Length: 419
Ligand code: AMP
Ligand code: GLY
Image (cartoon, rainbow, N blue to C red; front, side):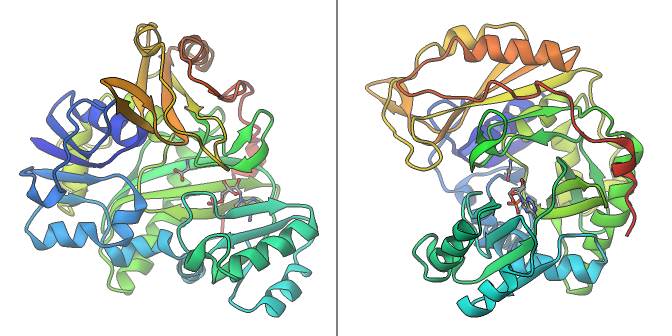
């Protein structure tokens, strides 16, 4: 098959890398660090399957456009992508589907928002309704910061129209898990769960980012836990979408928190996670292209190979970022050590915020490279990833040193999911 991957980040590089084991792959627009990158618009590329990476084009209807041109597409239409394009709408779907989630309110009015904030306990959670590149969520115990956030969102100062409607949520605590479900409109199969590290600094301090690292598998999260999640969250959500006339074909990324009161769905994204993809798809031993093509055709049941299979090992991804990320990322610094990092046993380096100047690779975005180490155990994968990351350098490079350092804090009683 010829597969066209749409996007330009580490996630798309990882998808292309793994698809390339069995298929011809072209990436658009890609970046100078991703082999097979072309600048051609997707609709002008002749491919048997189109895999859409980022949320923004999905929300803007790229999958509808390509399907309209008769192409096979992995990614929801604009109707389903609303799950990520509007957190208020997503919460409505969760409630209708009977999926456990944080209590919440949706606001456009400051006085009403501030009054609701005061009913929310000691941990304040304020989210933009619209897309904000993973940075529109503030979780704080500082009421003054929460109030400032409400004002800067509603005024449009922080995220423009994306923040003029906001969601305030009950603050939850617990460990988090990302489950990527491949959906065919009716049914879904889960890929191996992963854990993401959202905050910029070691020990989970500093602002939220798109994700600074990830690992898979996650100890204590069993196949039964994931099967249960599929039954109580993913399938009811697909059914609710169908009652709204939405045929959802693509990844439903479920962000979960294991709270003392049981698991809660924090969010859905309508695409593969970044950097979760960089640890989840390299572990596949079955053909990713066949899986995505079957889902795109609405026929996971017809997949000859059955459920996706994964290796018995582990993968750890460390995101290397530019100076100033996530607040004021700097661009244009020379990237050094890529060859040495890529030569470390068991390591693949995926290019994200990478540009080119005078034939050399330079930084061009906040998250520059994801270094994925694979090994027999999480510890082996982790030490390989960090050995490779230490070979990389550019002015102001930073990465977390505690990715996958401690096993998941998930405890068995927290895993019992019911509605
Ligand atoms: P989201 O984009 O909605 O997943 O939020 C980004 C991150 O903010 C999540 O991964 C959590 O770490 C945190 N978060 C989101 N919602 C809540 C909540 N209700 N309580 C506590 N933390 C949250
Ligand atoms: N790693 C979080 C995300 O992809 O949204």
